[in-house]
Length: 240
Image 1: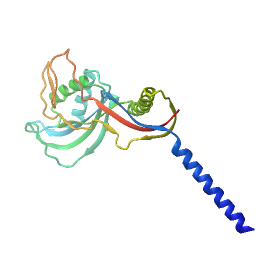
Image 2: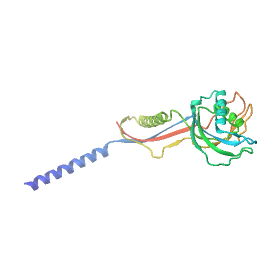
Image 3: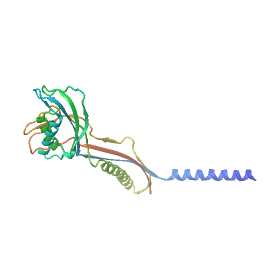
Image 4: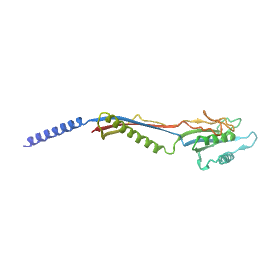
């Protein structure tokens, strides 16, 4: 009795499995890949500034505190919010950095966050006049980068659906429910994290040079290379 019951259940399961496989294999579907990209101008520019205690050519020294005060006054003069300036690091180790004939004895590293290249050009001119020990751009970013990435992903999914729609419409069919949606592993996010050296950069009343970025006159516009976000989505839709 038990053997007969087991045999009956076995055949029922096999029949159910075969039926499910047949149903799946007979479901018509379409596979598409949707891509989307976006380019945005960075609005967060992280500028690293090094101030160093140094000899002024006489027995007296120009302290870091004096240079810091001069830096803050210079930033206020060009209307840069001092809350964007923060101390990153400080060291009392002996460091030799050449700027003219001065020797840096102790140093402090500051981070200044700016929002556009025009303001950066103004800051650059002030740093050049103050003869700071060193300055460089450590990173550029965008204040809404997370939201922008999400939007590009949504655009990629919508592009996949739109592609399926017009391909199926061409043969008189319609797009059904999604069966699989998967973000491609080979998506790309081109974010600018280059280091732009500014130390020793030239500046004048009408021009500023930032590693190839030049403001030729007061009315010109300079910008960093845009941040490019690009994503791909694989989608499998049922065909109605």
